Length: 495
Image (spheres, rainbow, N blue to C red):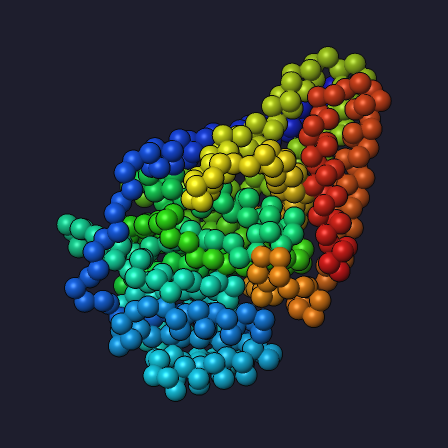
């Protein structure tokens, strides 16, 4: 019995230490981001004497609800026409093909240089499409927009000049990444919570990494690459599900610099259904684990400063936090019963458990996110901030089973197909899901039912803690039961 208690406490403590490590990284990134925001912002660089040849790549796969609006938005981008080339990289197998063909023909008739690029197969998925497109264009700069994005007309005019800032050793800016905006943040609780989490990345993590001189990542869309950077780093590869993160690390290990512009937003649509969100989360978390498996050794063998290697390690292993959350969560319920049986030696573990919320996500990290977001719109964080934070933490914990599975599959090298995230053409609260649903797979699978069982499991933990008057785990179990309940509810509702 004593051995079991020691094992339980040891595993629980290791999970908390891992979470605390990620939290310290977030706190440090917040400090760096605050310093960056406090300095005088970099003025908009002057326009280049000659605009470089630029290709806008639009990778599509069965995007019938958003393909037309994407092409219309990109056709409206302001740029010297003789230096601009639009490529619609269309791997679709549904009605999207006809819709795109009609749009491309319309703009070609107006004199726009735009091509409808079709491949005989979908080898390499998005990475393969991007690589194939490069062989059919002469662009020096490559802008990429996924199907759910709607760039503003001045996007290229605001971003391209940042490639021509003074670089005494020659051009080494390989990527300029912009912040994601949200077209349908207010559509539902699901989209609101996603926006809350993404804002932390774009308002704090990316500015913090840039301010500290650490590795950034291209976010897959809403940014521009220098073509020579892509080629020098080895080109697009489909051996991970996050081809963007993979190429980002290869390029920066080769000495290329990345720039991030929080002042420029690229609006995009958030997944509005649970199957869409789960497919996106699976791809992001498994792909990050695959990229960590691929590049962590190279990071530590590089001559980068120790701090940069440490930040890169936490960056690449960030999705592994879900494994720690899941393990800690499962262990927390039996700990309530063991502690109630009089195991005084477990009292320190329960005291540590009370610090779990601080270990998971420091309030200052998310408050600074909300503050910077509000500053963009000359407001202040609203009274609903605390409620959003609590629900976001709960929802993130509720996804831990789904995401932990993805992480473990990535770490062991299990290959899986690239499943795109369905886009439904939703704006704010306009539109309805009926008639626009696109399935990525069975939503009510064994994993979903297990999430429902875990909701009950953590409900038992709540009841046991109240009955046995052991309240150390109560906040954690409330969050877990709420989070898994939300995930299970939306999975059933959207099925």
